[in-house]
Length: 230
Ligand code: APR
Image 1 (cartoon, rainbow, N blue to C red):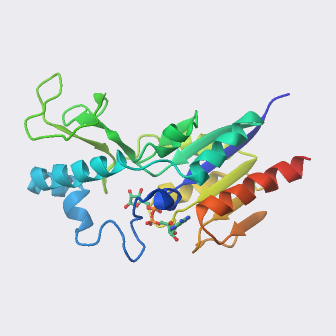
Image 2 (cartoon, rainbow, N blue to C red; image 1 turned 90 degrees about the horizontal axis):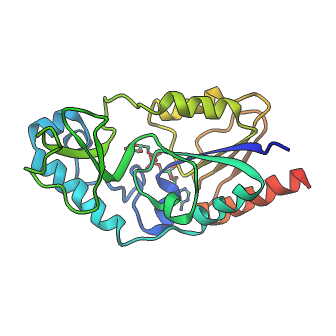
């Protein structure tokens, strides 16, 4: 029997309990940083050192944290379902928890890419320094989708969402487009869950909201999906 399809749309909130700050909460990551200075092509052009330092700090922090219960419980769904994770997060906590099908809409912190060829992407776990070059001789930059840049994996993500039987939205303020628009590709019959202490959508059919932290909320979602089938 073919497995039913689950798509998880995750945002910064799923990694909050691992110790990575979210973007738009009161103690958000961007506090003290003008987003456009550290996460835009203009910011990069104006001050590469600042941008590299910003992401080098994020990368060092990532190497010190671990997946939490929410990341891990999602993996258990793979036994009975075809699960795809579509994450806005640039951390690798879904991978480390053991999820097998992951799309990083906004790039990955542990990769670098050429500034002349966006498809020339290499693994990178140390600091990126000015002078670190790609094979063709251009400066390397973080493999991150900055504000104003295209989201190359959007179509693939939209296609997955359009086929999903269950959609689990977790830990995202749904404020950043086009990622936030992915839910519009869902089938009307898809059962949607939203796990977030401050859920920002309430107007979908077949929507179940768990207004709580990811660790407890995701466990309830998984239980709920299993109960529907039982
Ligand atoms: N569990 C679940 N959700 C949580 C938790 C938690 N423990 N703590 C906070 N949240 C929720 C907040 O209520 C908020 O809705 O996580 C969400 C975080 O929202 P944002 O900080 O806006 O993060 P996100 O939606 O992932 O941002 C999208 O913005 O800056 C860009 O590219 C960056 O990918 C990022 C994008």
